[in-house]
Amino acid sequence: MSKNNSIKTILFLSTSSGPGGAEQVISNLASSMDPAKYRGVLCVFRPGWLQERTHSRGIPTYVIPTQGMTDWRWARRFRDLLIDEHVDLIHAHEFDANVQGTAVAAYLGIPLVATVHGKHYFGEKLRRRLAYRWVSHRATMVAVSEDLKRFIVENVGIVSTRITVLYNGVNVPPTPDPAEVEACRREMNLPESDRVIGVVGNLYPVKGHQYLIDAIPAVLETYPDTSFVFAGRGHLESDLKQQVSRLGLDKRVHFLGLRQDIPRILALLDVFVLPSLSEGLSMAILEAMMAGKPVIATRVGGNPEIVIDGETGFLVPPKESHALAESLITLLKDRHLAAEFGEQGKRRAQRQFSLQTMVNAYQSLYAECLRTGS
Image (cartoon, rainbow, N blue to C red):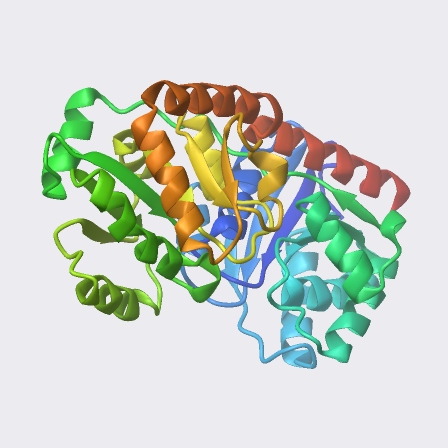
């Protein structure tokens, strides 16, 4: 539908406006495509972080509120947007956008790529499984990990050949000046001599922060000069702060809220931890690896596809605070091992999970979909 046949317009449709891993993928993709081949446009259901970030990068951005899958007013407005922007392909993300976008795309005869980032919105609802089976016949479905693909095949009933796996990717973070890092330490009131352990992620139940907090007393028994930082926001913040207070950890645990300076935070860390109960493919882990940090993560979702246990970090069972504590103590004790994990992880991330690798993979998929019209 583009006016210029040599440059194709890709519209990114997102269920959420973030902040989060899927939203980061969308923003990075929309702004990193080859401008000689593709032009990006964004549409979201509600305003928020993704809308603001993408708009700031000069990408045409639209907000069209929706009342759900049967909202014909949304469908009509979205159809008009596709026509006005001369959209050649839709790249939808997450359940609602995938289903609603596919319906309009099928009506207009526009190819659609439907990326699935996680498992939490499937539940046991038959209508959602049926909706995704329908999407799989009318769109090109993408899962962000092999684990997620297996889940969709086994739990939704989609034939495996209808799902492509494309890994997320991140940029190598800028290396902050040492003075910036020290300023960051002072801002957080972290003692100069303290080792620092951190986690980056929204404060939601699925991220498992409470299990890391339960592990902290055991770590402090062995290494009392250790501080813990939690970067992210979410509705569990109050509960987690109460848990910290009950355990008498207020002086050692710091909640940072939503941060725009993650490279500075990562530069401070001796160890990065992600105690999630479920993951698609974690952008936070990839960013930590790109920053050369040893990683301790739970053996869930796509984490084992990123972190090689015993080579780039440790994998522990979910909800196992004792295992988290043991792994943390091991890396605090053995600085050489921690440094080796960090270096091996950085090489692995640069080799397999770079932003450019992800962009190239999606651009190849776009070209195939545009060529075949599906």
